[in-house]
Image (cartoon, rainbow, N blue to C red; front, side, top):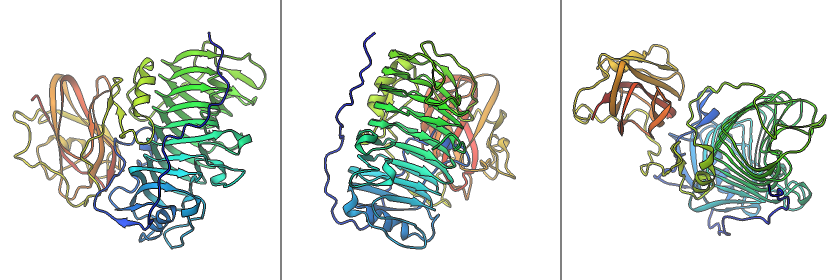
Length: 515
């Protein structure tokens, strides 16, 4: 086996310098809300929708981002902020208002909720400037680069974290971002993605974390065990010394990540933490999983991982690597649906999908990158559902009539059976912004199209997946309601899973057709 490389690479800055002109937040009619659908633990606890359904504004400076937050009617009024250009100390000032609590030298998402920050146009680069999420909930950050944030030296920002969360944070989805430094603690940098002091229900997906001493942590000390329910999937961790992540207490799910050149240690589960580690690809690295630098044990469940040129240290009282033949020492139950790519194709899939400015591509679970739906629903009026109407359904017999129905998450006063009764006046609605409803038959039935019809007064379906419930395979995914086609499939049960929504969606009919 080749000796693991331990020399830190020079920083690879993916985005060139951009000039931030103007900076005033401008109203716009085109939204770039989170695309591709929220996944992982961020779908739980009511789901994560960010600023869906609210106003969309554009900002080219950090001050303009703060102005957009402070101009809302309240601290919870939904807003999507499209960011283009370079955000830095020179253009990020404190802005005051009753709906915000901002600070200079950092993008401050403090004591607020229902916000999306998304990079658009030529890209958004937060240069030496971190994003701080504190006492906040329902936050989406997508398609941005955050680089070279320092905790010592000059300038400093956000305690040295590229993205940091603390103090009662709930439901954050960070997707298709690039987080990078140019060294470790001795060079003034800290973590790329940190969660502490009661931060829960977080997903980091399709992102790049590289050239740093520390990838990130979940819990700031052995006693800070109030964090967890974190999903990390389809991310590239490259040239990181340790903490990919460091997990103290709580539960984390890592799947389909590519870990390359972890120089000292990788996933560090300790202080009672439990990590579910599925179908990841570890390459040219050292001690990629275990309990390190403490005698307080953590635990892991492993399945389907590839260890390519990974070296393992000897065990000691405070150093307990899981290898050289990692086996599970706990079991972790995951409450959400997910589809695994095979581990051997993870490097290829992650290379094509992860990071900012990659076109928001995602994996379909069969090692094939997919582009998002080109039709962005944008903010819509919850009072005007998208219903194709009785003349639009596919030809043939609605196979749902007379079939059974069940699901997960049901609002009071609604019924799963209402989606198969042929009556547009009755409906099923999830108890929050996520949930699923299924149609089932006693014998295998071939289905190639479904028609999801919304009742009057419905909210909008933000993102969905259509699943072969028998196998868990994803037949289709997208956003909104209406006719959805896919390869003809023989199954006994088909599921429409809502992973994000604006308002309360009311599914009047879940129609199924053979052709």
